[in-house]
Image (cartoon, rainbow, N blue to C red):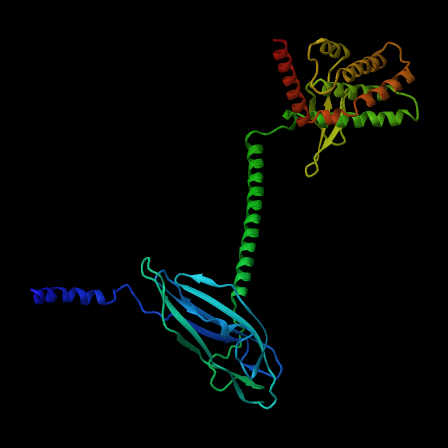
Length: 396
């Protein structure tokens, strides 16, 4: 029975001892050396790079002794090691690549026209194996010999060299630097592509709008802050002109138009805007407004507010949303004074009254462009709404 059982189990044991078809024998450690030049003169500096690949898997790995590769301990006589550095290791699949870079020179003076070899390197390593959850087992010490490298002194090419290209070796640091530069250039190219796409989209959108809707600039609502700034600029110019002379009917009409626009901004009333040519004459009650830097446009803005309309708004519970009551009252008074002077039956203009009213109006409306900006208006409206709600809650 034992003999029969052995005959049955023998093929199975033999199959288990054979390697599977998926396994492939690979060297646990391999090294190669490159130098930046194949011929040097005495005292000339050149670069030597030593790269090694070691196997690292979950079941086994090679543990090399890296002490012979350190710049302070490497043996390269008769060459002298000036400096050296180790690059960051690179892991690629089951392999780990380590690299050292050295700066060497030859100081001997009796080797002109000869081939001098960089000595061979003997590197030792051990194989560490691990089976399932068992502790790792370290094998015996093995040796890997890196062949010597010939260097010609005062000659073009050594006798037994195959590669005569004299190209400096590409180190891991150079590869990392080139990868960083490539990623940076790719990012810059992507940003420029997005900018080009945005400009193209904007241009196509404008073309589509012009061909489809025939957009008219007069239909766009003029921001209150822009209108207030333009009106105050007009009032300041009129004040500077009249301070050197007497008021004229044309100046009174211009001041009245600017005051009406300022009052419209103060109570958030709509302002009429019409696109005009740069040198075209304006109608009575309009002031010229230039806006835009890349595509400058000229518009004529006006408002039909009167002192009666402003007084009615003052009588309402919440008559305005931009300026305060004192500013609106001053603008209502100024509109009334300039309306009476411009449309009055007698053509005598009250010079002192017009000047004082204009100065007082400018003083009361200095902060109007800032208060008319959209964020400030929304903030003040939110604060007022919150205060009203709190007053109602407190009263209850």
